[in-house]
Length: 447
Figure 1 (cartoon, rainbow, N blue to C red):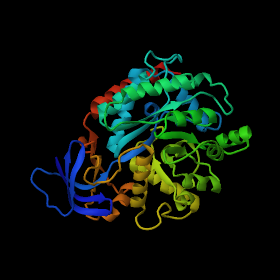
Figure 2 (cartoon, rainbow, N blue to C red):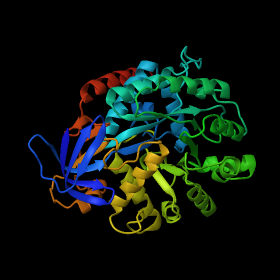
Figure 3 (tube, helix red, strand yellow):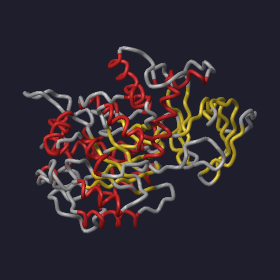
Figure 4 (cartoon, helix red, strand yellow):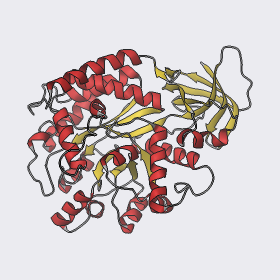
């Protein structure tokens, strides 16, 4: 297969008239300044595919259904109760159908790899399935059916609060001890068979896993992506201070060897010292700006973090909306509101290009993905954009895509397979119909 791009985002910047030959899921050649040929697939602008470093795919099933104010002040914690009610009803077939919808929409948005932070492990009554990886296998099946690459992150969840508190009834589908979790990991490792897929590990949070358990997981599963929610809400920070006299990131840094394999999800509420410590560790911060805004979490200190050399990637988290451009726009706009200034998240030049490149590199690091470059030998994870104005100016294209000038995803290839054409996944209608059937049934069943 040969693609001809009028412009392509190469490692050294935008190239023009770029011919790319795809073979066996890889880029066999990348040649700027090449004339188009008969039979080429012609695109306006080509980018590397974006990694989605943090998702709970099943939550796509109740996207938009929590926007009703109750009698009390709504927050992450009230939203969580709705999430638990939905999670407690979802069976394996429903998980697969909803995850497939999320995966298809991710590909349509320009994500070519999914980091699935997966904690819905057991049957609705809390008992383990005969195969401990039953629900993980449904994620594998959804990823394979849609074509997205997968970094699977089984979540270790043992407690309901700091200090090893007993889990709540609504958490019964999530919970393992370390031995059972190691068996889950072994089952997942034995079941991954696509060469593009990866397996990581994810202690849910400092309130759901003790530091001893976190250290066990890091030692038992070394060299893998290691993800953890941290400092997402003010209440979490306050509870951590009450428990141990330290803030979550401060306590984690003192208790574990945080390094480049780690991804700290959200890390919203940080002191200056914590900002510097994360940046110095080489860990990636996983930012999910649309979900963080939807839940009212707060604003990440991006300006200080980036000035310290910090690395970040983006994720869709609750999948309330699935959009590469939307996540990057919300990240930048949140900083503009906080600082009452413009163009915060880049040192100079195009804000859109700077955001995109930083998220691309950080996401690949966090998910143990191949380097996301358009070079010979790289994985053929490609996203083509279409520009309705056809300005022919690639230097402004990412700014206009992210900040709302009608630029959109046209085509997507993952591991060399052409999955999205004309902005739609090739199996979109079938996938949507299957997921809609599940969601309607769950809504009809009620709480």
